[in-house]
Amino acid sequence: MTKLWARTLLRRAAAGGGTAPRAGVGSRTEAVAGAFAPASVPSCGILRMHVDAAPEGPALRLGGAMEIVDHFIARYSKEYDFYSRAAHLVSQALERDLKESGVRCIVTYRAKDIKRLEEKCRQRAPKKKYKSVEDIYDDIVDLAGVRIALYFPGEQDQVEKAVNRLFDLTAKKSFPESNERPPGKEFSGYSATHYRVRLKERELIDLDKRYAKARVEVQVASVLMHSWSEVEHDLAYKPLSGDLSEAEKRSWTSSMDWLSLANCRSGCCKRRARIESLGTVDSSITMNSQLTC
Image (tube, rainbow, N blue to C red; front, side):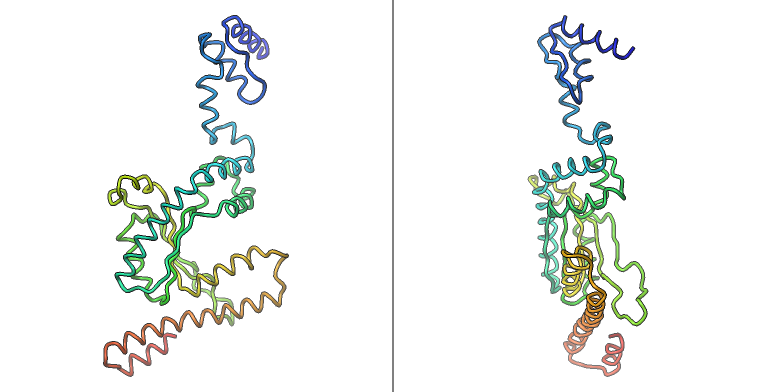
């Protein structure tokens, strides 16, 4: 019955001067368009254009998770400059505000590298079972990112106040999620606070208002922690020549224990400097500072 219906449509299309549908994806849609369109309108017409412009549609979902990743990467490649500009605007606002507040830090920004993003999506696809391009956008939250590396971790509260004042905060997440440490170890893992923000449209010039739609992740941690994060990301989770040996893992863990101590002492130095700047050093305050280290 279906074949008879299709042949009837083809005959009507030919009789009306329409173009016969091409073989392949969308041929049935073109047949319908050709059967009911005037002779002067190509059968591909508006219907086919709409299908081509909607990569998130049902046809794509049937193509598999990897095909969805391909379409996502193609779309993100065109949007890369958009995310880079959004991240730049966020970093500029934070750097200016924190400098005026006397917070010593390094502020950097980036849009996620296209090649690394593709690798990440392909690794996550089997588990996440992406059904649309939008699923990937919801999953990868740091396409636009800003890092604030603090010389003194104790100043994080000032950064949080600046984030809340300058942007629309949509989410906040702290690492580690628990205070538990491995027995005999000082280092409990990556320690930072991540904020997901959007620029306030009303405070942007007309040319930049569109960047208020971008979601930007602001990562705040100490200088030492950000340095560790970079190395850990490449070596511990993405080794170039196989997994780390047990000896390398022990050496890595030992280095992290040292990092935890150094990170703590940087906070102690900051507190000591503030106490000395007051001109009157109370021995009990000094002792308490030492104990908190």
